Structures are given as C-alpha cells and as structure tokens.
Image (cartoon, rainbow, N blue to C red; front, side, top):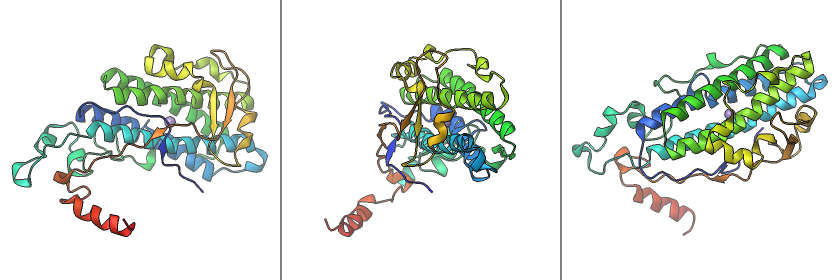
Length: 294
Ligand code: MN3
C-alpha cells in the first residue's frame, strides 16, 4: 500500500508566461513510451508480479522502491505541464471565444479535455497505454529492460531539454536526469551482481555527462546522484545490498532513509472560462468554506 505526501520531490520555479507548445513537448516525458508513466508502471507491475521474492529480497526491494519514487515523478512532470499552461486562457464569456488560442496549440486536448492541465499521454496526443509495460517474470530480462527504459527516457529528456528553454521544463528535466541516472546505475549494478557483466561501463547513454546541463549539475553538486531514497517507513531496506560502493564519478553511494525534502505542490488558479472548478467558482468556494466551519 501507499502513503502520500502532499509535496513535490523538488521545488519548481513559477513560470513568467504560459508556454502551451512547450507543455505539449513535455507531455512525452509524462505519457510517451519512455515517459514517467512507463517507468512507474513497469516497476510497479514487476514488483506486484515478482516470483521468488523471499530468496531475492534485494532485487524485489530495488524494483518496488524505485517504482515508488516514479510515482512522484509523474506528479512532478504533471506539475510542470500544469505550470506551463497556467495563464494560457483569455478572460471572457463563452461568446467571446476565450479559448480560441487553444485551437492553434500543438495539443488541443489541453484546451478541450483537461482545462489547461496535463493528460495521460504523449507529445502527439496519443494516450499512454499498457503495451509499454514489460513484466516477463524473468528477473535478468526485466532488469535489462529497465536499464534500457531508463536510458531511453534519458535520451528523450535531453531532446526535450534541447527543444525548450522554458525554465520550469528545464528545472524538472535537470532533476529527473539526475534521478534517472541513479535508477540506470542501480539496475546496472543489479545486473552486474547476477551476471558479472559490467553494465555500468555502458553509462552514460547517450555519451554526454549530466554536468553539461546546469539544471542537473547543481543537483549533482548537492550529491543527489549518489542518493537512493528509501520511500518507506520500515520496508525495502535491502536496497542497500545493491546500492553500495562508489559512484563512477566518485564519492560513496548512499541509501537515504525517507524522501527528499522537495518543494510545494503548485496551487493552480481557477479558470472560469474552462468551468474549472466552475463557471462561478466563488459559489462552490463558499460551500467548502461553510463545510469547514469558517
Ligand atoms: Mn523517473
């Protein structure tokens, strides 16, 4: 089961202006084949379906624990998209066509379906689907797939970074490049322990260091690339049997008990033109206020 903390894993900057087409590109990092929905659901189902876990506790713990961190990554990418779409509505009555700019956006679903927020799909408007989940039951094959998935995700993150200078998008990508680097290395190390094949020598893929990206470099300077957070009160402690030793860039790998400090979840303002949360939101705000005895 899960507990939930109402914070993001990292603080995001507030945008100065809306960037709907940038948000459309960032969608790929949420619901594209190599997006956070895919990492989340691959590791989640592999952990649900794990056979022989009593004898393979470090590997089970690793997959289950990383899955939980990924839950916070879909939250972070969704928050990024939401911030990039904030302020995108024109004000006015329906007859004034306040949503008219939305017809020229790369992704019209943001205007029609989600009230200027994230949707569970990729940059071309296709919804995420379960075909992206590989859960074969063979431990080495699943770990190999996860290693591939993390590096495919890294390639797409870097390309989206190259497509936009939006500071919210770049902050999120910088942080997730560092966290994805941890996951790629963790799966590499897990395969190494099982096979002796030195997978970590393949890293980084593509062959460009995270330090090339200022938004990632600052998190590496804080040592985040060496931390594997343990997202549980009492469980998944055997990740320490895999996440140990030295980072390829130097410094000791460490398991951090508990989540990162993170930052606040952005408060999204109402968009009455989208009837979100209502055409006259103050009416339902009043109802909620009375309910809380204010
Ligand atoms: Mn991730």
